[in-house]
Image 1 (cartoon, rainbow, N blue to C red):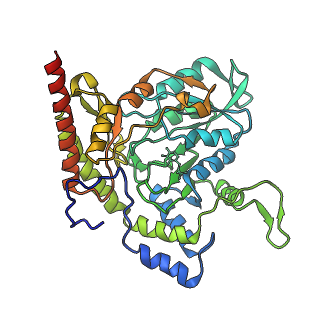
Image 2: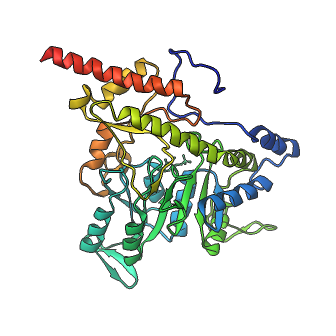
Image 3: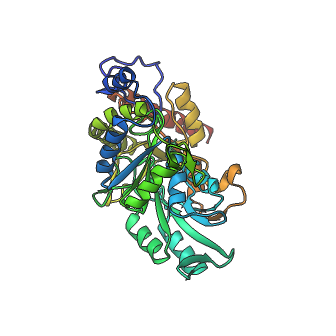
Length: 403
Ligand SMILES: *Cc1c(COP(=O)(O)O)cnc(C)c1O
């Protein structure tokens, strides 16, 4: 949709639309014209080089999805069946599923109440109280299982507090696999996320900051891990003539066609980030004036991309709860969304262990993500802000009338 076209007040405002433009047509057409459409080609190489530079790492391996990146990364980190892996409970389910694909067991960790990222102090107290290092392994005393890795998930375009997390993970010998699916362009202490741990993962799904339709990447500074990532994601082929495979691999590679779109997207990513940051500033200033609306706190160590602008609603002050507000926004054709059901509540991961404080449960109950497309117009943003103001006034009015 062109930025100049005014949006009629009744037209829908989506939560997140991809922004397709720049060289996208030219690059995809080049793939079609040359028949280089599959999982090798110049755009794959170029996309990987651009990604590595963006993430400040030596190697990027483009794969079919963020989920495939996570699964492969856990295998690269040496996660074995029956190992335990710490992971944020407040995340999209892919982070937890990847652990289960390895036959390993997630331990869900609650969120901190300020920026809603994994609570590093909970991780620390669990490791210090319930685990010990024995023969170079981290042993969970109660279960007798090895804790092999931790997946800090950078949620909503804000970074995890990485320095204390890495310090405690290193002290206990855990591999650190960053889920930076929502973290393209996000920085912690001035350095991009995805490059802080042993391995990092990006996603290029349709609703992420940049998209390849579907896709992901594995990021690492370790040449041997990168080589093994390529091997595992291309069916672990050891002999290309006789098709000899010494291991069970995966068909997880990104295609040249998708990488072509990815290259065009990455050429524009600085503009995407600048636009998202200025839209977030507008949201944050205006929304903070509505009673009962709280925003994610921005850590002084964070450079945020505001992937999804998310508000936390205090029903008593705002006038109604988040789900009523969600329905009211829907009536105004504004698409909002709650956060994900926390993983410790998910029927898919029933019976998993968790370290809980109640924060993620409350955030799930109280938060709504608001329209956050790169191409969101100021007019549409004003519509969202005014709608929330109206909803609050309407419900506060009716509760006063009832009192
Ligand atoms: C999107 C997302 C993923 C999965 O990425 P896909 O490319 O959709 O497979 C994983 N983790 C988080 C936190 C995500 O937001």
